[in-house]
Image 1: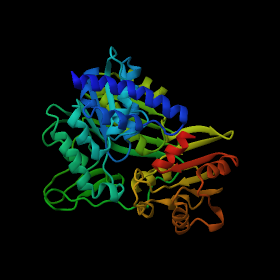
Image 2: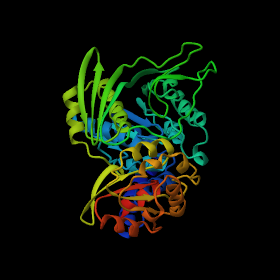
Image 3: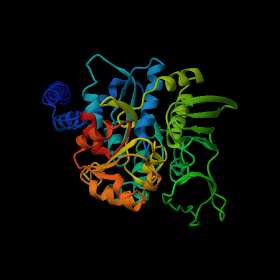
Image 4: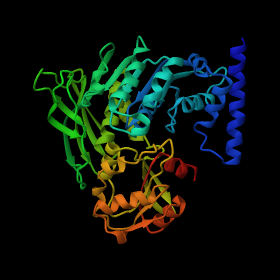
Length: 439
């Protein structure tokens, strides 16, 4: 009874706290309320499980969590399901608690919870809430000071998987680490058989790729390599190779969209995805695989894809100072390199890099990211944030003429300078993105 009282008390205080921070404009409101309720009621999330009637879906991985979870939530909502979802990407325990604290009502139930989870926090989340599905997008090298080596991150996810006896996995077959997570669980795989480009930008990247060894110790080789370590890998020594996909697909990538042809149960289905880049095609394929796996049909999934709008800095389009702007988060070498391929070199460009805890203190990833893609930028290239000077130095070595580079640490001034001069591409790290969102 005392625990229940704490839970309901925390819900009341959550609403008051949220109202307070909105009135004072002191926070983005994505985690503070969650921090408060977890202080009052440490097992708050355990109580929230009873408010989910059907399934809990979790999504993790280095890149693509927010877009994939957003697509999955929108597919379910378009199919008339009531969904609770951490839409803004706050994916640690406080962020997850935050969205439940502001969504749960005593007599209200949700059909689905769609929860994006930080890789390192997934096992902690599963201490309180059991999941029915886990979608894993990919594993790339992230900020070394926060995540360490890839094997460490993979270990976090494996530990989380072991906590859920009945967990169903939806895995990216093209990622050689993600594909190993099926050892003790039911799993289905998605991946691309062929990738074709019909776009104006250069689809090759100069960013370094990880080298992976098979469990026998031999270096994996590739018959097809799409980007970074994503592709068709095999071991020349023991014969281990990429899993056969349950949802294999071909994709044709255009400037602003992709067309994905998916095979499911010996039938072929074509989907148009209004998001740029191969990396977003992977996110969409993960969501499509989930849709099919849960019994939805092509028409229902395509309707959701047609009406989906990019969220919170993930290819997000806005009008700023009367001109169009596109905002795309960058936070690690592979993700940044894939985004940089798609940048409109005829736009003004703002790159805002912070080194706060949520960004990772270590900014060495800037040197592994393919900023050489910007060397033919035609207009302003403005660096901003706490590491504006470091970013400017990186651009100099990427071959961008110094006279084109402007250093403006104040983010608002940098964005105003760019957007007043025309269309703009804004590439922020995580806390810079939060500042943009706050306005």
